[in-house]
Length: 498
Image (cartoon, rainbow, N blue to C red; front, side, top):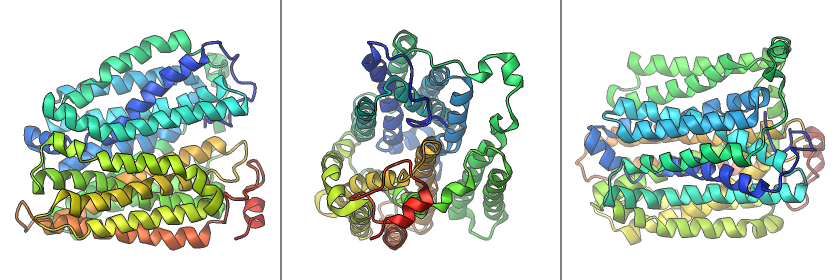
């Protein structure tokens, strides 16, 4: 897996224009992050144009995250074998072409295929970009600053997505939320060969050496396929349950198939000489608890983005532009919490900060679980969204750092890849489950009823609250006096006490 720590410490021969290279890499990352949230405000307009019901619209969101999360570890392996710059360019090309296809889609099937293509492009480009940044900035101080810029621009994309979505949908058309990616991706494709140097030659670059690659260096395509197909089948089964009932064969078969695929993935990892995810990685309880809590928090946050937007436009009868602007308080609270989390962690530690974030998110979910059928934006929706934003800023950042705690040089890339994958897969699976819960009571209600929204937010709150004891009891008290990265994970965990 590529990572900031798994590449040679000498890095690439640092070019004078490496900050220009960082800018180019960051532009694509901003677009990748933007496309996580940019569809939310446009969903009702998409549904009206393409005659898509809420279950189909869920796939517009989850398809992107499922493809990105399921193929991310494979993307890192491909970058290791065939070159990071090459995989970054291929990922950017696939992302841009899929964005164009999404913009011209004349039906739900084409749009969903395009969203899966965008996610696959992300899976190739994102880990390659991380590794290229590590190679371009071999000095720890420069690398930390570069990764901070890269991460900050990614956060800007997440925040800007909901605002841009409302503006483009209202003033132009929902298709422009995808068209806007095309010229920017084209610029990235043109500039990357000029400012991003090729990384060192890889074994697979030479056909003779590629044939001599040891068995453990094989691509791992079957494992990556299982990790992608498993969640896909689970999401399909959950969403069908809203219309067909949990006892129907059309629901039980995909659920069983999804669980079987994930079980086979775990078995394959246990037997492979060089697996995508070694099972020993999950023996570290702090990292495992952080990743499990990330799944539950990401599920609640994805549900909030999706259902809050539908509530604004379908229940409160807001226009796409007004719905997008209504996210301004959410964005402000998110940016504020992100800006202060660095000061909170030294005081509370990662565990205390994560618990604080989870409790804030649970408070927000509890507020939203009381949404009335005829609500008001500022009294019924915004307070819950503000609490969710603070929970997202504090909780996710603390959990992300905890998921990387105590990693060795060998496992640094694996840890970051697993954390990113569980974030996306957790968000997509959780969204499917909670939207499925929302659709069931909504089926017998009037169009303006909030019964389904209340059900989904109630279960989202239960999930976040379940993460609180998981983090409090299983995560070590790290952050205030964490052991240095690179120590043995098990010894590290046993040595740090509350």
